[in-house]
Amino acid sequence: MAGPKKRNSLVPGLVKGMVTTARTMTRPAHTQQYPDVKPDLPPRSRGVIALLHENCTSCMLCARECPDWCIYIDSHKETIPAGPEGGRDRQQNVLDRFAIDFSLCMYCGICIDVCPFDALFWSPEFEYAETDIRDLLHEKERLGEWMETVPPPAALDPGAPDAGEVTAAAKPARTPRAARPPRNVASPDPETSPGPDADPGSGS
Image (cartoon, rainbow, N blue to C red):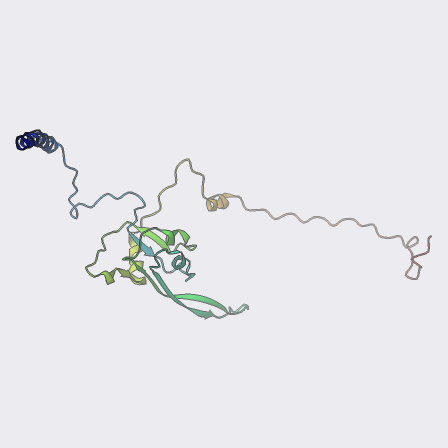
């Protein structure tokens, strides 16, 4: 008795499946023919991190804040001699190595957010898969090549206030304050003023 019931219960399920298949066949497909057709990525897509090494001061802030410890920075100090007008020599950090291991990176973007000198940027490029995991370690030169793919910043919302820098630049320059005329100080009367040999404790 159990066998025929199981066979009878398969028929409605098979019919429903065929109906669903026929209904789906009449609908247009949404498959993108990648890689022949590139996907339309949303704004601020996180593909790869680009480096503008001219802005990097080797402050190590991005490497310290990285939760995966996938940023490696090496630098040395160089002495800049004082100018001809005087002053003293000063030290400057020179970037020797800046590398990101994308096999460890979790694409959180903390390094980009904490960089105080705008040296790191998001690029929407994501086609950098490698057959060897060691090739996912991008050195300074390759990170700099990604800068060509960094899109310009998005326009501000029409209702958003202007940035502080724009507001400060639009303010009129301060006019120098006019010099105040010297106060008229009454000169002491030589007849009533005590002489240098007068006793300060004696009254007049």
